[in-house]
Length: 281
Ligand SMILES: [Zn+2]
Image (cartoon, rainbow, N blue to C red; front, side, top):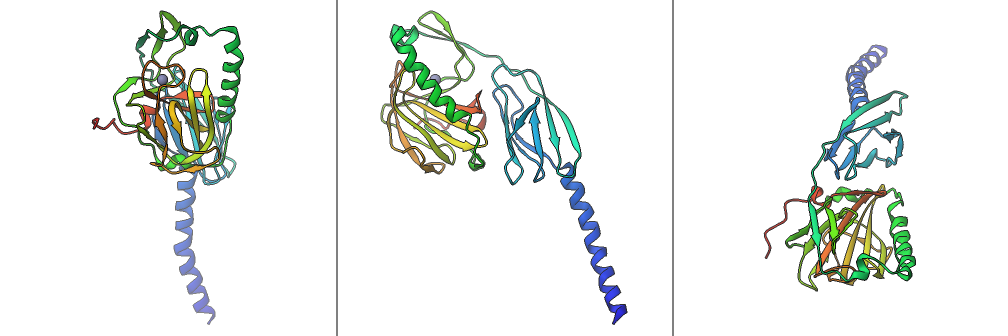
């Protein structure tokens, strides 16, 4: 009887201990990444549960399952440091190399002058719009809806790319912080990924009818110049759900969707997270 117990115990440990060692080593080193280590790039990380992460000294939210998100802006330096504190007390510092990009210059003429050089009475409205958009961007929810992956919200010719230096009616302005897709007015726009509708606004100064989706961990997307919005704030959306239609409200010279993506307040390039644009129908 006693002998049998020892045998069973030995058998158990012979199986269990190597398994335990193997999984704990794997867990210790197991930080993986998926994404683009480039300016404008989004990277999804997967760390052992209970890890803490900092990007260049700033805290990064880590979901309960160990998933986290980081992003690199248009002019991000070529190196960033990622500090990981593992639940077993070890800490690791990794140097990330961020590939630089070159940006085009885009000239757009024929915009209403007031939309390029706003009147004093427009400034308060612009500030209020920016505040509302900014509030969504800094909301860090526990959602990891971005794991659905992203697809184009609308199919059509790309009429404006991320990062281009803009000269509007001859005036140098901020770089373009999203991607523009030209499509006929009324074309349906689909949610490119799962998320929660975080903002619906019928008339912003620059972006007209505007909506935003919160995808979790500080990742959000914005849809501008829409003709109609058919979702409500707080509504859950699934990848592919209709969210509204293409228009030319706000500052636009023709019907198109401006699609922007941010990690907290850092503008990312949505074009990096989707497959190549399908041929136009
Ligand atoms: Zn745009």
